[in-house]
Image 1: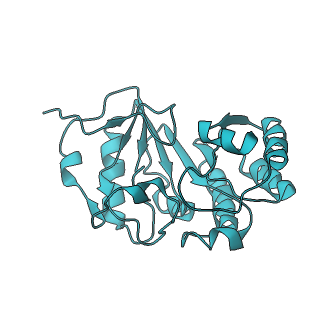
Image 2: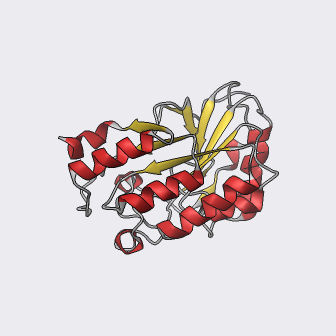
Image 3: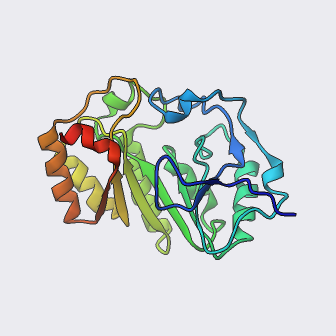
Length: 229
């Protein structure tokens, strides 16, 4: 039986075919106040087994798996993640994006990821004290160090970075971090919610983009235009 449980397009990335969210519900552990999912009513964190029982992933597509909650947060049972990865491995011709603000947990599943896997994290700033105002997720420095380690443990995989919503930053440190992680590309976006963040100046963002374009591909999201006006 084939039932479409894939949400096509993505609020975060227009290059994915669709999002697939067998693990869903309230991301209580990280609780990022600026998360776009806050606008939707969230139920208890859960694994929807019906997603695993049907043939709902087309071949040769790119899927963002776990876009509606951070399925790699420490309160998500290992068994749930293993079931999701097993399902993805049944469709090895696809490319799968897994992104988390707790990228250190990726290490538990090295060897279990599908062959075409992209691992990513969000780094809004290099200032830990800024993110701590709005999120209980691991601080940016920890995410950076874990992604460097993941790049070493998962050399055949690809990594990406999301700088969204971008907050004020130290440009030298941000560029250093990107060099060390060496992502396939970087997506940069601004806050599009109702939370007032401490944001960088137009000149600072422009300089960062210029520096990063010398290192990798940079994708500027539409909402970044607010900061660049």
